[in-house]
Image (cartoon, rainbow, N blue to C red; front, side):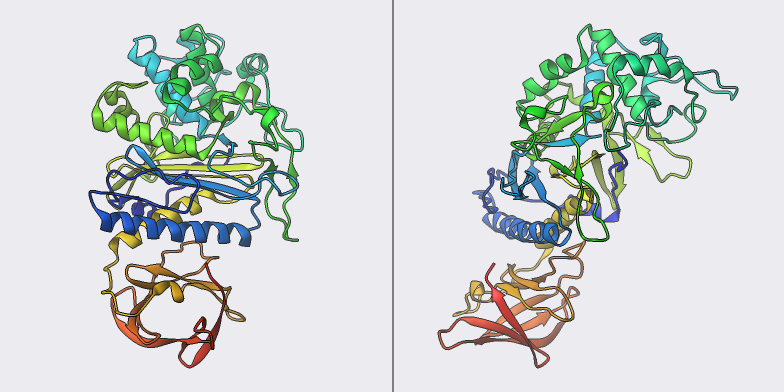
Length: 494
């Protein structure tokens, strides 16, 4: 609900060019194959191995019960993985097919449904919403304003109240209103702002878009979306509903924000009811990656599939930008320019769940992250993308005879100064991976192999620094690293 797809400057990392013809990695450690470019495939595999190690460690530091993540490249899912456990007893492992509430990511499906009606000539984006929903007339507002339109609702610029007038984000019961309740009370709600003057995120607005789909199609909203979007795209684990029968099984249970005691309270399952078009879908990250690939495929081939390619382009361009030029939005999609890379998508936050779906259309790269706790999936998505970019930009060190990098990889003791750190293979050498770092690719210094258990530190600027030596025991196993005469024991392998 409250997270609106935060896209900080780090999201420019989505502009990484990665392997063509990559094959799905499933739930195994990243194994990306590319006959067209083995070097790029190897780079992607190392980046995703690092992402896997970092995501799970970060999850543990943040005490998040379950995280699922997936990376789409073009028409393929190149990596998809679950971490942690999804049930209250913490026994059922998370996978890429685990179902989560995706909350506001639901808005993308609602926007697509409306644009299907637009393609058929059944709606006009700049017509007043009341042309299709006569009951959706808000209380009189003395301020001068243009009409509230569907375009305004899709871009969150219609001046509508943020919510229907019910306390559905309040626990423990989360009393979401029915369609009838929303319709009965909307007449007592006044606009927050004159239309088209202020960006104000609105769940009520996208709920009205879903109501419009139902009104002009003649089908119940959920039935329409299932038949015209989800089924054609093969999104078998995506629903315009919360599947209560799967709760604690394939669907992860929800947990709250981290307390000062380091615990997370249980969060009760909710029914989004009349708010479903804005916040009521559930999905797996595997399905969200397929959704991302559909957008790339549609844009690349131009062949109509659920939408026309021109319609998708229209949705993913900026239709509203705030007067301070800091907030921009397409038709349903968040749209931002980040360092020359256009990033589109949406985020979601509902009681017990948070989700991020971020896509770079030109680069055909998408990242989906879902978790069953109130934390920051945007940070995870940015970190995965940053690792992909960093590995792609890394110059590969020449191989040194007799050096097997796997001998040195592992988890090393960082106490008392830092958390335990990892040394991982990286472009012909090693690099440090800090598992509790919010940006795992920030300032990545590297270790260049020299032979005889010695490596040279190379900074992120390419400067060569001190030696790092490794110590072995009597059996030949590496047991510590030594830097500036100080020893860090190797605790275990990766």
